[in-house]
Length: 64
Image (cartoon, rainbow, N blue to C red; front, top):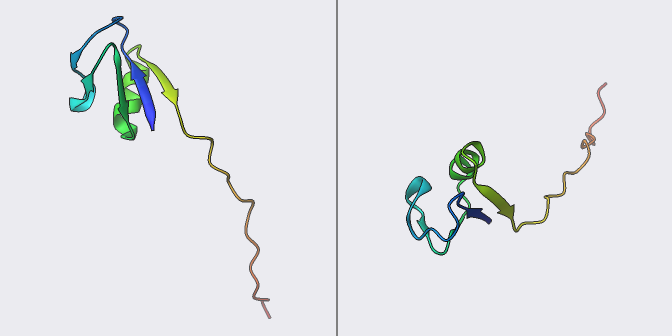
């Protein structure tokens, strides 16, 4: 989940991707809305911890 913060402090009303902002903040998981917000000067706060990326998996089958 990400929190989008408008460049207009305290804004309340409809905004990016149909989100409703209250006191300048709205939450979303929509990657397109998050990307749009970043491109247009919104502050984006990510709540989620970075996902762990496993290393390359090794095949358990041997080629022969």
